[in-house]
Length: 259
Length: 339
Image (tube, rainbow over all chains, first blue to last red):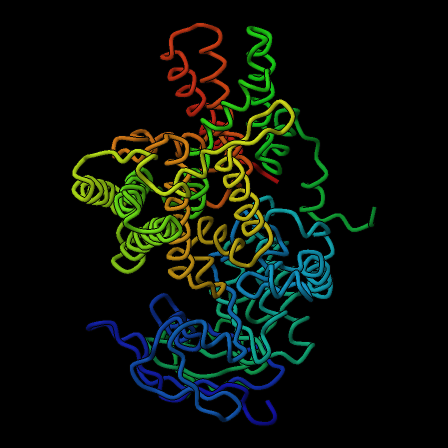
């Protein structure tokens, strides 16, 4: 963790009626790191991430990107700021093909008259670049970019989502429970992709219930408990069971400072 | 083959049963089934009565199909977004009656009357779209309501009276004028409908807007998360559909030789029928206007063929009903496609 943070959030508060989702949470994301976020159900993991990606507007708190304060009112705003999100729900359009999904909402037009006047999209170019983006992330098994996404397995669909985020995220990518719906092999492929993204210098936030997955790829782990940050640990400083103990309140970071 | 063999690769290499192959083929090219039905009905009806395949009879089919075929383009757009439009006929009648009444006795020049008709259809579509996107009402309820509202306004405005083509500027019935292509007699209305199919088909297949229409109908939430402004796409679809209905009003005057408030009473169901037989999914996200064209032609073939075969028109109604059920059943089956 060197240099200044790419993204920093200070004093994030979000309430839903009487329910307190976030109770003053700070978070920093540094260049080229994978930051894991763990926490029990209702600890505020998703709420925190939704505030960072514009899906929710925090009641209080300040988010800065590269030191510049930002205010996200909708996901579009976060996206334009270079934050790409991969959702647990495999947010892809099943009937559209891989290339169309990769470029959904950012279709590229053909050059010249065809593009400017007839508004034709560059199907060939997008398919070619989609294939390259997929291969770059080590997903060589998907060759046909014109294949509808619904004919893919869950892991392959998630690969499309990750590839989309990696291709367009200029600041960071956020993965919300990317392996929750996947099997062992498919999960490993997603973890491989996360490392690949990190190796390009793009920082990643990984929210997961799955401790082994988090401990496998994360550089630092933000532990969320009852709407607050219960501490930030690293896979070398703390064991998995210590992290779980902090997460569930069995101990605190002060009592278990780690190695 | 590479030496690595992941589970997904093995999965992709397994053998497929013949029925799965058919399923996959239909999944990739949904227009195949309506195309086959069209070809088979053509062959069967021609063999029953050779007059069926005569240029005269086929030209007539085209003219009969034109109006519903045009309305079905708008209906296709809306059904692609997983919506439905029950106000198709009402908007058309409203546009037609207002344009015709304004132009009656050349109160308004023909060009302006046509423009007013299309503009009114566009505005009516915009109303539907606004109710769907702003007040978040289901399209079925919105268009069920506007079906009555637009029909009533159309009838009140025209006092329930028809306007004959002779009482209007020539331009309004220009769409009914015909020219010869070989032995075929083609009306300008049919040409307009063909152009409509080309333009909308192109936009759906080759523009970002088309992609977004499919994505919104396919999975609204995924589309939203991908950064598509879902409401804006929906609003544009209802508005474009309204413009198409307004244009169809002009074609209908030419076809009927009059503007009658009682014309095309079955437009709603017939347009939905053409879309569904054409393989566009009522659940949204799947289909194309090419299928709709085939669907409209199939209905036209059944009407002409069964009438030339000398059977009661109710058999056509029966056959079309069965086709609709079959088409939706096939769609359900196709949607269950696996890798």
